[in-house]
Length: 605
Image (cartoon, rainbow, N blue to C red; front, side, top):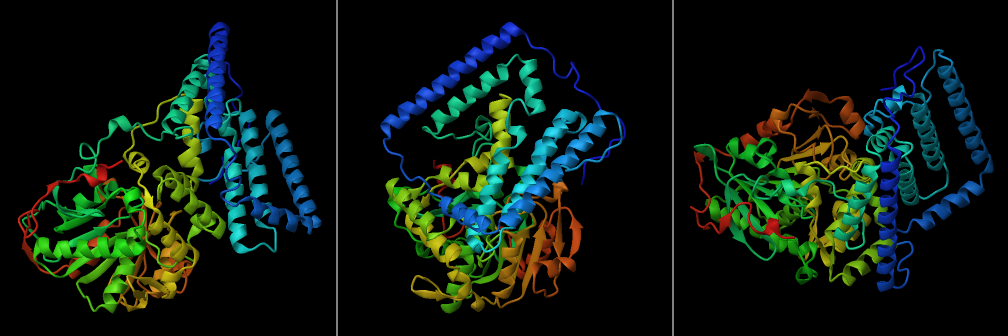
């Protein structure tokens, strides 16, 4: 989608849009801004006095990658010269079109805004020729820089991914939307309020620094509007089992009859389970219960130093297996179906392979939500996985007491979509001086969890770095994990715009599982691609049951269906769920109810 062609002189800078401020009030507010800025500097220096030394200069190991880039560019000066000529040619065309627009002549947009780029949604970016010129200059330079860097030959693939990723981080940070004088919305607000927005914004900066103990912990959401168990995670149910690693929730049926085989959901422990039970209108758990499934969900504990030595093996033997055993006891039914989400899906796949070796046939079908088992196409997260970074991360986790702080994990994920999850809040909170909105998914995103050092490092090294799980070389609980031994029906859900578990990566599982396996791709990303209830009538999904060697080949033959994929999945799972039986009430079986859902583990900070 490109910017529309304009045929005559556009709307010019209007005094009504950019009114002259009250000089006295503006001066007073700028003085207040100066005071708060001074407070920030003093606070920063005082914190440095208590933390002597510079610490690790390059913990992300970015410098060596860019040194490698510079070396290869120096060995190909012609390519650098050609790139410079291309950039200046683009600038010349932009200047020519700007001059034509100024003279009232027809003109074409040189660099259109990327489709779906929310940064330039303010009309002034298109209607006002000054800001339109600023925008196009930025996009021209940004595109040129990224294309030039990506085109340098002879660089190792891992280094190239890192260079491309951090080049984009730099480009995003330099966007004109992130500065007062080059963002028309911010400029208008500054003039309209005589600079009060900047005072409020700096107040927000100070508050966020204090909240983050010296680190800038940007508030993404008004967390005063949400309460887990209050207006989030409200589907009725009971905790029917718990140990040191998880609680098991069983949900109250809403139908008189249910399928005989219960449904166990294994969510990620990187986040909290209630992403699948936000509000009633978008709760997957509530919806699945209404379809006649007896739904159980694992609610992982938020680990501290006491669990620092827990490994991926322990999440299998002390989490996965006990959850299955508890479902058996609670229902009196031996066979069940299972869902694994994200890293919970990675654990589930390893668990199913482990069960296959042990001749344990209790699981009759498996569904995977945006889960990776082959990590060769793991996307941008792979830029954080090399020996130096992993060693630095492990040292930091040991220093903190044996765990990775939840905020550190959140920062990593936010960097994957920096414009949406970092810079949009910088503009809203700090430049416009506004409070963040009340949005349930963002509240969940900010409700972070910690990672035990032993488990996390084993997972990153053996899965992300070495890809042992896909190669059949990973050992868990003394057993070699071979995914090809999984012969039960499998449903793979991926999301088109997933930055965490890319669809191309999820697709690779088709060649690893030996049973009947169906791959489906939903619209949107890692979260919205999953949490998309039929009532919302949003996005779409693609299906194709024919064999394909690559994701592109699969997509070429896929059928697109508008709306949610939930009913499509229900049609797949229902025939695998047994006959209908009388609905089961949590606590009425062999396992008594311990407390009301959502339980206490999910509320641990």
